[in-house]
Image (cartoon, rainbow, N blue to C red; front, side):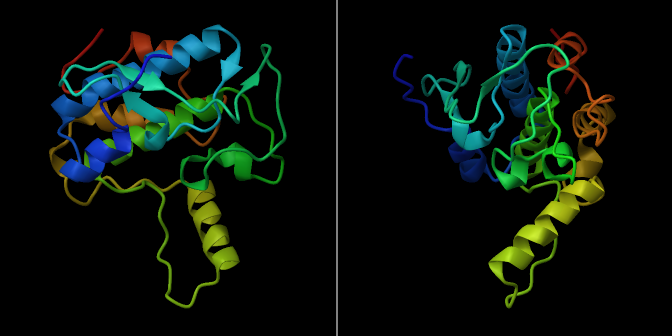
Length: 197
């Protein structure tokens, strides 16, 4: 892989707090295309997060590179995995459920979380933690919030974000992996801020 001098996606989000829809759309499209490339080649990443997405350079239209394939796995159509992998904040509900049966759909979920964060600066599933919460209790609360799947589109800046962007996120954060968008559907139907293929 070439040297990536543009920093991590997480750095851009932290610097700006959140991105406008016009800024986020091309980045989101690159994320989905990277997932599609992986899935087409029978690879699921299973640890997608802004820290694992690097910009090649500092230009505004810099390509984005997906890194850290430590939790990745080769898969065959309809193959399911039962190990718990990834980073909790980006983990799909099927990884956290008692059945722990997952496939490549987990990458689409994680990408949906990343797009949500890019557009508002917060996680879509983030319970209220008390100061006296133990680590285990906090993990349990976070897991329950993800499994419940309530997405906040009411607080700022969501009222001014397009319905197409919210619809895309809802489809990516669909709790049922069988109903969740695939990377190919996502790329073909990508609409955010009137930016399409």
